[in-house]
Length: 116
Image (tube, rainbow, N blue to C red):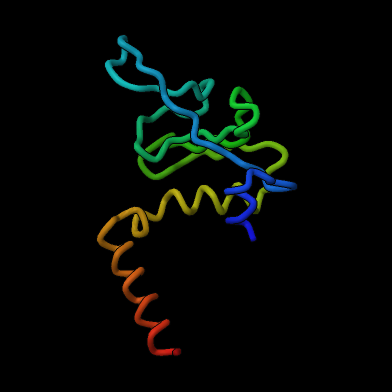
């Protein structure tokens, strides 16, 4: 299973990505990522993903360019389908909310009890 591969560190053809961590910028008085001019608006939703084995290589970046517009840049090995799915998941705050997470977990547990 995927979980077994992660714990045993035998990833095979699985691509492991990690969030690029922002660096402190005293000029801006906050943490920043270099989007090379592609992202122009500050947002909690801005992020970059890099391959875990090569953290200098950004494979996806997503960020706000205006109130209701975002830009999505990606490269191989991600497909447009994968990149769009990752971007969409970052816009949905419902699962990120701990209260919602616990509600979903409870509903899932209740479903298991009913099916047994």
